[in-house]
Length: 251
Image 1 (cartoon, one colour):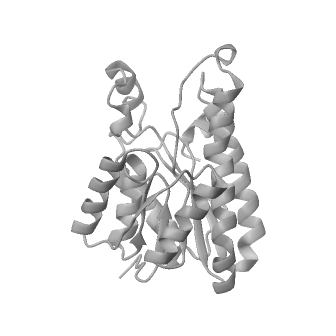
Image 2 (cartoon, helix red, strand yellow):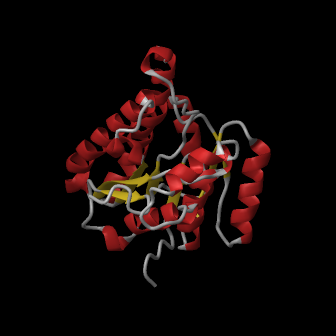
């Protein structure tokens, strides 16, 4: 079977909801054991855990703050004890993403973005690498965003942090290629999930009108792209970005 992840263990951070939930489901349906990572919403995470189990996915609940070293260590200890050593790492956890003119941001907002999109992938990768290098095999897939490629404004805090994440990922891909660990990116467009329930309908329609394929993306679309990069079929692919946005960034 193509894209068979049987026997692999995946960590997808922030996957109790939204795109992360879809990514974890895609990896799990391909045979991976997938933890459910969350920070605050225990009831929502428990519901995702049950959904994964009903789909036949071996899973465990892993509460932790992945922007801290203590939280990352706690996550890996839970996963390694219950599911095994991590083969696939998908830094996906996100924070609020306010759109403001640059004069209206404060540095704390910038710092929060950096913590989620640069510090967290760095800490997670450091924790995952020893066993990946030992096995000469591993997949790190950062969930970035089209906002960097499209220079979206007024959104400088998020765009800057995502740009840093993209640059860091490319450097990691080159550094880790000789070890057997690939490092790639999936860059979703605006895919409405639970967090977008209150977004103005006119903004949604304006974005939808720009999508060449002519439909909204779904979490499964992001999950399927991530699944390919996590698979053996992508063993010669590293340092690359798959834009999952219906053609809005065709390069």
